Length: 114
Length: 114
Image (cartoon, rainbow over all chains, first blue to last red; front, top):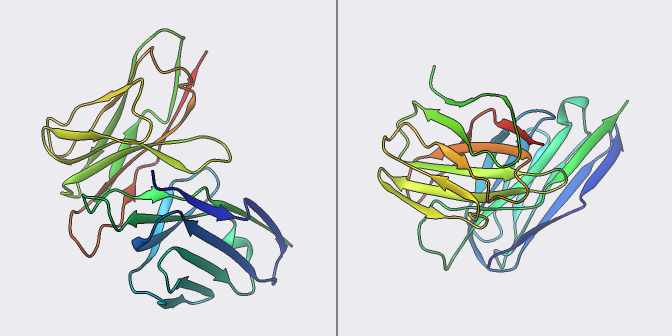
């Protein structure tokens, strides 16, 4: 079945440093979504990427979808303590039926130290 | 306010007992999902449903059962056959459209079985 891996699993940064998490799928994706889960909370949708090579920005966050639509990345510039949490990518395989089933990545837990 | 509610937030059961987790949404979403989250792992799909009276197994359905008698409700039963039931359970819902199906998550139920 489809597998989605993320690296790194954990990342500790000093406030103000940049952070990047990478997402890799075993199969080609029709689109990819990113979610953030704060400690003790539930995942919250951040963004969806659909087109090959697409880049989207949300303030300090930059999301990219690979040209082959098998990988994606999330980059945070100048991290803040409010960025703490676990970031998940989630993709729908291009060959799967049913447009609503997502496969979630393993997540990257970000800790930001002052 | 629109949203997804899960109850209870914390649940304790003895081994060998079945337990049902509640999930209700008033977002008028057609699709609903159940995920399991274990420490250091991503979200794993248990069951999902696109329409009332229909549901499909996810990646880890063994030991679980669901029903979808109403659009708003998608309860999950953790049976005694589930070998490792202690986990954080998340319910989610989404619209069903080709272009947009971000998932909205409930606050989760943390189940402990001893």
